[in-house]
Image (tube, rainbow, N blue to C red):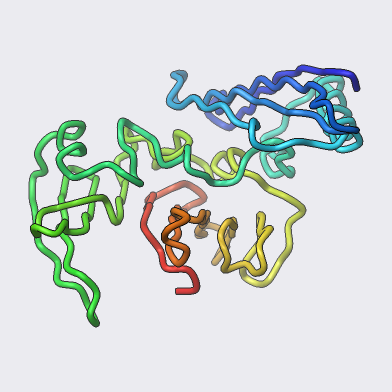
Length: 266
């Protein structure tokens, strides 16, 4: 495979979910290739998120050839089934830093005042006393949106600690919205050969355990209820802190999206 390029369209029950353009080229190393992708997340016919990824990784020639054969097989079949959303995602990335930038927010670094400039003044503000020695926080409430901030040295709201989304018109990471099908959510993230540990399904877990970020876990409690969790390491200077994307599913559709700072092993 001297070089190759292809494009894929992911569809769900309600229409297009994402479009991805990929270009592969030799790196100069033996059997090593780049696999750069530009992805567009689509919600209700509009682009809600754009991302470029793949610069930091490489792929072996045999793996690239296998990926291309899968793409060609799908293209030649000329068929479509919603169940294809459950197939392993060969090119989707794990939950990562880029996913913390959404709807004008930067969960990792944005201060409360910067958030206020995007969302406006909250309809309610409460100080929350930390339990068992945990620090106090400040909670801002918006219609169908709730944010919690840590306190800066002066006791004012600092960076975000958590955000809860229940508004179907507010897009979360990768354009995920309340009301979407579970299969549509799963199709946007890496899904490797699944491993089952009842009731958990391990979507990916390249670390030493399923509790060590990065990882993706699906838990199904009934035919209608489930949760999906994706975790990523926060920052190099905070090795014990991770960022968790927690998605609650009811009647097989997203009912709540929660993003929060999480202590590894908690």
